Length: 199
Ligand SMILES: [Zn+2]
View (cartoon, rainbow, N blue to C red):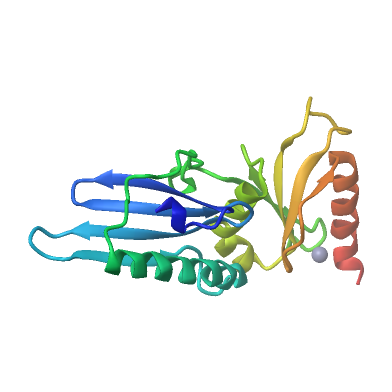
């Protein structure tokens, strides 16, 4: 299957009984989607393809634009010849966040108490793909809260006010990852908080 994959997409395979799950990851967008193959004895293999992410997350369309032609190519190849589905990339998946608690913190306005900002702490996130995974999995939270939201990675050194972390703003618009020190970031948050009820 690997020869069907563009260089920036990797695939891992999990297998249990008659079911094989192929998970596709993009170098920068993180997990794209899954192909689930179910073998029914004496019958054809049933294949289902699912893109990951919430339907109203704009990034889901971006993922779909890569995932759909990819799965179509693979299905087409499978229809004409047996595809070697045993060769898979051994790159490890980051642990599923489904069963992992993601720490987040809502900052309320000191005057009116309304939410002003949301911080999501991305433990262990290092690559752009890791940040993209957090952004996808926490989408429902920042969409529902509808306040400026950031995903904050681990400290890039000995933790302290002058040691930067990678930070990605994800709401109201998604921005690129930048390196910010807690000192500078807290200044920005303080301005946001103190400006809330002054308008
Ligand atoms: Zn306020």
